[in-house]
Length: 283
Image 1 (cartoon, helix red, strand yellow):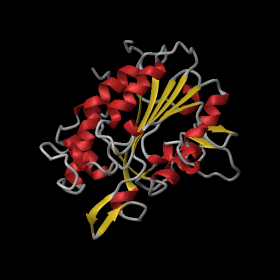
Image 2 (cartoon, helix red, strand yellow):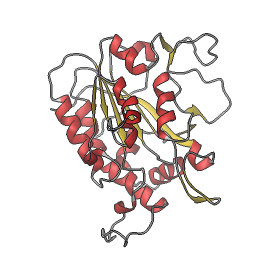
Image 3 (cartoon, rainbow, N blue to C red):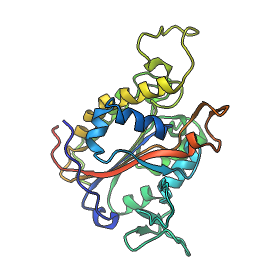
């Protein structure tokens, strides 16, 4: 059961008083997310998004720089003329997007800043930039006190989100009393995603290529498991300030373009939402 979300207060008011959940639906395109929501095919996300997805522009076109920006305070920007004050920001002189309701901190990232405020910081990795298996793959997860990744939670696993939620269930079962900052990088939308299409032979070489239909099917797979995610993060004694967004989209032949790490509307336009989940989860 998805609870009715509450409006999100200014970020400085929630620090220390709320748990925080930050979910990146890696590679999710805005147009597909909006179309699936409008068609009623993502009912669990719809229950948390009474106003629908907000259309925003990402600060980067692939996972690594997008998350570096997110953690420094540069979340996707509303796709309309600004100014757009930020929720939180690493302090630096002359910032024109730091407003009176922006939570500003001296650390380089919000992960480190929240740890300094007494938060337990947890990363549930998905794509390879969170794998911890290479020097580059250790940069982002090393920001967190705890980080978790395996091939089961990675892009090649058709059950990656299930595996991520299993890890999260084990992780949050501890009795640590600190407020929690939980970050989940959901890998299911990223290629390969052709295996989410019903009735497709799973034998290598017989699958169709990834495309908008398989991308949408991957989102439906994630949506079906959103209630479990919500139940898990609501097991604490605090409301849960929640950010859900994509880090970038991807092109499936749009105007001749394929993939991401390129400047195209399908890549730089992403879905975004922020809200508060009330206290009330069940262990």
